[in-house]
Length: 165
Ligand SMILES: CC(C)(COP(=O)(O)OP(=O)(O)OC[C@H]1O[C@@H](n2cnc3c(N)ncnc32)[C@H](O)[C@@H]1OP(=O)(O)O)[C@@H](O)C(=O)NCCC(=O)NCCS
Image (tube, rainbow, N blue to C red; front, side):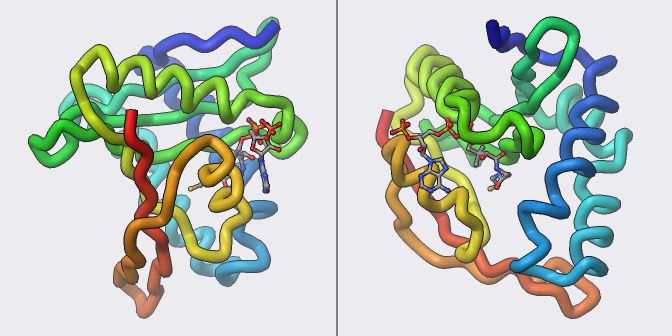
């Protein structure tokens, strides 16, 4: 049975490990290997993850079966001081995808957002990522596009997607 629980700082190295195991298959046909490495170093540095948890109010939920951590989602209530919840990251190990765990993680964030009286979930996703279809399936719609310059000449070509809760 899959258990979902809120992460403590000690779980953040597992979060980082999941990202490193999941990014190559997720992004190999979308961005270069160099860009994957650059973004992982920037976004999954342990001290950066700790800072997000302890100072920026990000909540990390972990999905676990027995002793194995399979994936995580991170979110932020009242994003930009608006009644909205930002989903920052959601990654499941390749062998754990397609089993309903992603939807279960989104459902938990919907509950947290409702409790906080937030009115929508919001996220960014690469326009070529198959996850776009997953998000549509669980009730998100693409409301805008956003191209973000992340340095070294790299560009993130995203959809902004939202879901009313
Ligand atoms: C995207 C991700 C979180 C989805 O989680 P998941 O556990 O694989 O998805 P689920 O099994 O919960 O799927 C829920 C529904 O979406 C559908 N779905 C999932 N992926 C889909 C896809 N690529 N295309 C169409 N439908 C899809 C499922 O069929 C399911 O539909 P159902 O309820 O009718 O059965 C997961 O696949 C993942 O970690 N992918 C790689 C990392 C990634 O891209 N993260 C997002 C970065 S923004």
